[in-house]
Length: 176
Image (cartoon, rainbow, N blue to C red):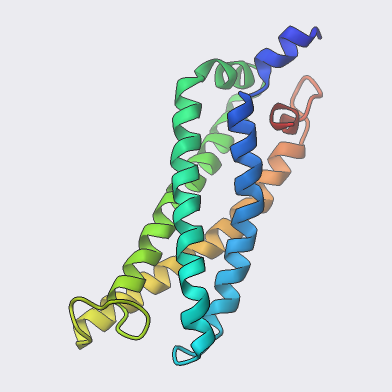
């Protein structure tokens, strides 16, 4: 395959860079969040590290939106990639990618909601009543389950990237 043909299949450089940046940030953010979740609400360390977790989550959401925008602006690399694979694999990849984008944008929003409502961690503009506490707990549970969903999707994504396509090439090459 010529270099020009190979480059047509590869994703744009900015998309590849954002992909790898998110690939480093996301597992770290999940592990950090799980560690932070083990700290007691009254632990001063939690109050110290929470803003970093919130900022990193916000950064992930912004990077995911930016990456999605770049993908939408460069459909040629997606069409070239889709033409090389089977319909089932296209659907599976599309489902995993859609779930990733939903989670990468939705989880920071849920986390921000938890922070806003929790009177022990955030500003709690609605007080600390039972109803507010219930909503905070629901959002926290959704945030937690969403993080585990990402943890399940990551190995599926890696497996898909490493599994050869019908022509023998691995999708990982498009992100290299």
